[in-house]
Image 1 (cartoon, helix red, strand yellow):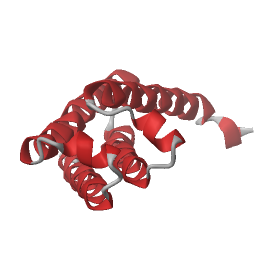
Image 2 (spheres, one colour):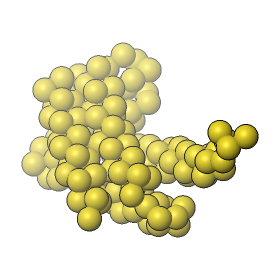
Image 3 (cartoon, one colour):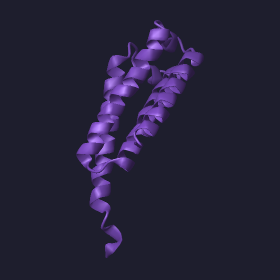
Image 4 (cartoon, one colour):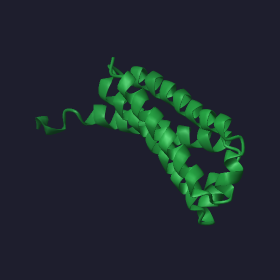
Length: 132
């Protein structure tokens, strides 16, 4: 019955990851000037693309943190670092495009794609940096 010996560790890391992902989603939706969920509910693709890219951009370094951490506390700390870095990506794009939220609210896909792409790029770099 050694098949399930790793189950407790799996559950711990998985639950922690889901909690961190939900925490990131709450933080992200609070720092943006637009209401992602309302825009997504009213079928604004630019908001869905930007939000999805941001979530994936956070999930990448979070996955790296899970893979390389030595404990749940270590994973939590690196997950929080990933959260800070990923919110910084949003503020970086908003600095370059001060009317970012207005553009997304107006459904400008180019803006949604730019934010998603920047979020993913930062997430990939963040994940790679966590391997050392």
